[in-house]
Length: 625
Ligand code: GCB
Image (cartoon, rainbow, N blue to C red):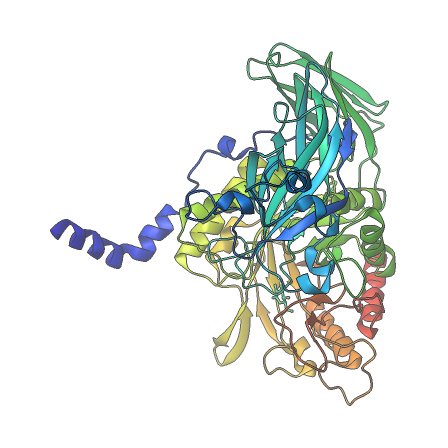
């Protein structure tokens, strides 16, 4: 009892400090690497499993919790490899309360919320099934690669569990060499969209927590020993360096070759762990990647038995004083924020190339932008590859948003894993220049320790890019004058300061007051306004500058841009947001009806007046820098 009391006192007295102390990475950075990556898997032999899948809702989770229970559980287990119609035809005592072979169909990838009105607000477990035919090739390995399942996935092949994954926006790979059958296969995936206080994000967000298999699934075959990962990038010292990781019994002592277009080649031999590193001086003819000239090279990595290809750009990114330097030259980031929702009145979060291109083209050509904040989670690989191709710099983030369970080491571990999965996925994308470690998280010791661990993790995994976070600003009186400041110890961990500000929309400021607000900011680092915005319902006009009119939003942009002009260290903008997006917290019955209306375009792509205001501003900026 005494011991319990002492322990309790320790918890009570040292709660926050002890919690803050636990917020160090519980693992080494190497432990965060997913077991299999299959980098550049788009270049591999594969079978696309997109298309019609069948599905069955499971609100009570009977298919998962059946294991030790007291009813005849097996009749609920959707993942069983069983031909139920054939069983029924035979008659007998066994019966089933599901049959995925005869269930309704849904197009995958895509969120279920958009698939049918009955699932619009469904939040829970849904079972999906896809049958496919496969060849089993002697000496080859087979993997299933899921680009994203929101939020938890339980994966079964032919009735056998082959793996699980948590986190709705990052890929995972499961080996199925043994579980795969020659001929017919039954793939079953339980998808649980439920979020709670220990998930990332929590259920408290300002976007729709779409559920489902939201990105493609592919069956990929490789040789027995294969190239699992390969990276190459241009360093500040003008050298091109890279690394290749093989997996398999013959991974050690292999010669690995790298060819960068017809510009350069290199080769190296793998060590005992199957890893080879290479370095070469950047050839004089190398054309550097930039938004103005998004040159990508065909890069081929090969061994005697395997080869992968990727299209990769070469550029440097750095901060010097309060400038951001792209390829050594100062750049102003003319950007906008973007959620992963295609245009249309019923978005399914299905980022086809066409859907993604339409959005990115609005930014690049409509706004004359060179930058996009991909908020608030890792966007699809399609979007990242298009940013490389079209020429848009990218801010990338994971959904450590508003609040998560800062004091919980298991949640920190989830964040570090998610971040690692994102970095391993995207580190060959020249477009990505900044990793953000959080969005608008209220300052506390435990929260700052959490973000600091994330920032250290990013630097350990990828020292070549910049680290930022979207911070909150405080307003308070200094010598009788109201001043806006960043009062956040996390700022010390960041290369680029970024702040979200909504003066003139939330709060009581009038629009004409905005340019005269006093801001006090560190002068030694670049600043980005990572968000500012105001709602407007497309087509609601000329109603005396009321909130929700297009005029109010346009004037809000004019005045906030006038304020921005007065911030001497400002090096970029990503206002909130390109298009209206669905958010269950936005329930104003006249103007919102489930949509956050801060888009410069409506959900169907109609440009509001403010679009032109920002485009004019960016045209002027592009002329000067
Ligand atoms: C924010 C959040 C963003 C919201 C936005 C808003 O600060 O970062 O996710 O959607 O404000 O509309 O209030």
